[in-house]
Picture (cartoon, helix red, strand yellow):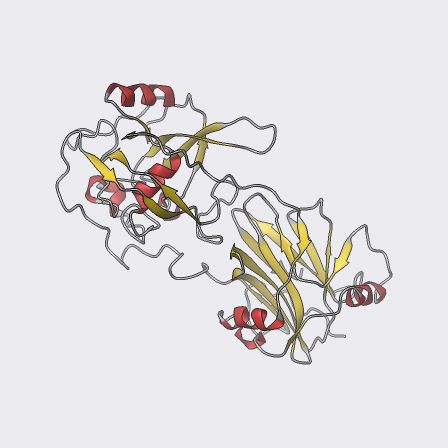
Amino acid sequence: MAALGCACWLALGCQARHSAPPAPSASAAPKASAALPSRTPKETPLPGERVEIPGGVFLAGSVPGEPGRVPELEPRQHSVELGPYQIDRLPYPNDPARAPLTGVPREEAKRLCAERGGRLCTELEWERACKGPDSDAFGMGKNWDARCATTPSSCASGFEVLAMGASIYEWTAGDVVGESGSARRAAVRGAAASGAGPTHRCAARRAQDAEAKADELGFRCCAGAPNAAGMTEPKLDVTFKKTRITPDELAKLFAKDPATAELAHDIRFFKDPDSAETVVSRGPGDRKGLTFGVAPMLWNPVAGAEFLLVTGRSGENTSFVAAFYVVGDSDYRLASSFILRNEPGPVAFAYDGFLRPRLHFSTCWGCPGETGKILFRKPERAVILQP
C-alpha cells in the first residue's frame, strides 16, 4: 500500500498533495484598493445631517473563509429585514468641520445621542447603513480602499453614509453574548485607521468593555424607533456529525477549484463502516480511544465555523481527503485538500468529539507514514497535512 507520501505543505509534484485555496470566491474576497476606487460622496456633508435608511432586506454577517472573518463573532451571511430609521452621516459630533469625538465610554455616548434626540444604533442598523443597498462588504464599496483611513469623510456607503468602518471603532447599542457563563460585552463596529484591510469590513465585530475609553473609539447616532431584529450569535454544535452528499454533488464541488479539478470524475465513497474497520485492522489494532469512520461529516471546531469533511476515491487509484467551508445550506467552497496518488484506499477519519480543533485520517492506523492530520487554525482555516 502506498504511504501518504512526502510532507509537502502547499507544494506540488509529490505523491500526496494537499492545498489550501484562496478566498471562497471573487465576490466574497476583499481585493486590492487599486481594483475599484472607493465610492465618493455625491454631496458635501452638512453639520447635523442625518440619512434616511429605507426599510428592506440586506445580507448580514460574513462569508465563511472570507479574509479577516472571526467565526466566533460573525454569523454566517443571512438575510435580515429592517424597518426604516435615520443615521448620522458622520460620527459624532456629525460635523464635517470637527474631528470625531473619541475617548468616551458607551453610557456617555448614549447620553450624548439622547441630547440630540437620537440613540446609539443597533448593530444591524449600523451594518445595513455600512453595506448599503447592495450589501457591499465595505462602507465604501466592494473592496477596501486604504485612502479612506486617512480621509474617511471622502468615502461613502451606498446609502451616502460617510466614514463607516474607515478610521475609528464605533459603539453600538448591542452586546456580544459569549458562551454559557461568560459575561456580555459591548459590541463595537468599524476599525482603526491602522487596521489591516479585512478589519474594515462592515460585518466585522469586536467585544469591548462598555467602560473603555480609547482615542480610536467613537460613535454615531441613529434616530427613529430602534429595530427589534438582533444579531444571530454563533453557537457551538456537535463537534462531528455525519451528513449526506452524493458523488455527483461532490464532483461538481471539485470541478469548481483548480486544486481539485482532477478529482471531478468517477467518485466513489468508501463503504461505511467496513472500510473504517479495514484501516484499523491493517495496524496493531489500538484505536487510542478514537472513533473511526469514512462517511462525509460536518465538523464544528469553534462556534461559527463549520466544515464539510469528505474522503473517498476518484478513479481506481487516487484517493482524497478534503475540507469545504459550509457557506449555506448545500453550499460549500473548498478550504483544503489532500490527494493520495497510487492509493486505492480506504482512507478513514479518526476523531474524538471532545477534541474540537483536530482529527486524523489514515490508510493504516498505527502504521508509520500512513496517517495525517486535519487541523483548525484561527481565525478560520482547515489545514490538511501529513507530518
